[in-house]
Length: 312
Image (cartoon, rainbow, N blue to C red; front, top):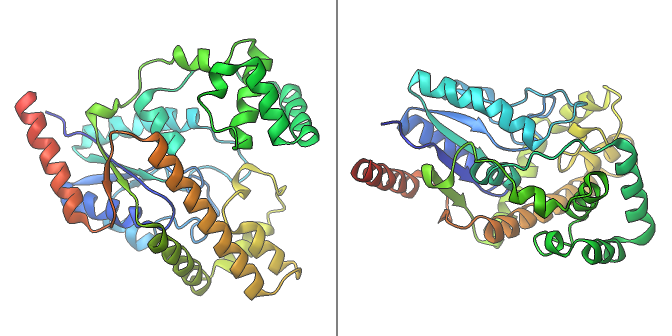
């Protein structure tokens, strides 16, 4: 019987990477990235990718394999993940899939709608309308045309609203209809051990601040300077790392380091809060852990394994 993959989701600075590494060591596993920013090369410190010594302690996959200027979607991540899972099974390694991108986990465990690519002209029209009308009016107009999708998405999230508008405009079908035709997931949730690491908000905020201080000590400014030297457009896919705009502003001489650090800390705390909210609202059926200590996680894995032996 093949052991069920372990999923470890959580907001930034929650300690999920250290937990995943501990689980990989205890279970004979491979750590697989499910974070949309850690896929990009160029950022190790700023996105808190596992360090080289950490990578030496267990196999790591899908980290830093995408060029900073290249687009990378959840669909591409799923396509990359399939062979990695097959490789793990062949090697007798237990997959430990870890990250903070909730959409990756939802696509993995619930399936991903196969929607045709959106033409650039349609996307440009939507972006222009959103900027012109404002999010409230744009979302209201979408809801009037597509109530089913509007009821499923966060209408306060401009990216989600714009995506729903694009799909409707480009395909003539609501996003909800595409989602209802979603093929079977790569890993159904029932066939995994899903763990959600959700520290109390005040603890998470303190961890976010401490992480930014540590990044500064580890040389994040040199990393940001090296990325700036690549001359990529500010809206390039890999340039969305939290904290990058603030540190770049400092390196351009526009702000002091103290100001940049404070702004990066605020952006990180806000990002972590959004992740917390998303995971709590969207990821039902996951075992919630408040701390990254591995003993509870290992106990839950053992429990799931024992149940699988009885039922399988």
